Length: 92
Image 1 (tube, rainbow, N blue to C red):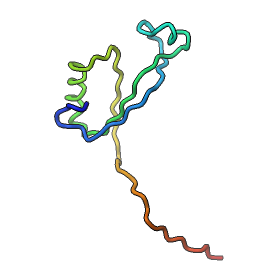
Image 2: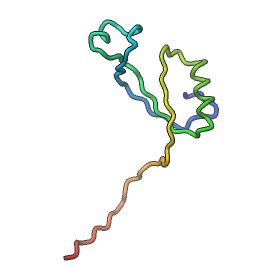
Image 3: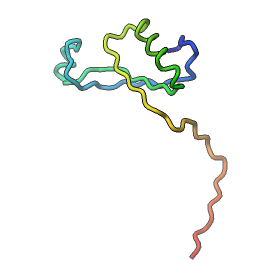
Image 4: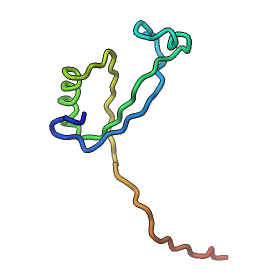
């Protein structure tokens, strides 16, 4: 992801637990727990980049089981800290 062309402006990862039917690659501990440890990645990028990114991941990523989904994002941005807030008293 860090070497993607065109460069991806940022992405988020976190650790998750996978629940499902396919435990053939699961460790003994994961089988006892009933879930497998996995990594989750979220990237917001232009739709026209999706096919190329998935193709690059298929070719270059050493991931036995990669699950993905694509969904539209209507709005994406960052909230900035408000420096002042005007609060008006309630009218009676």
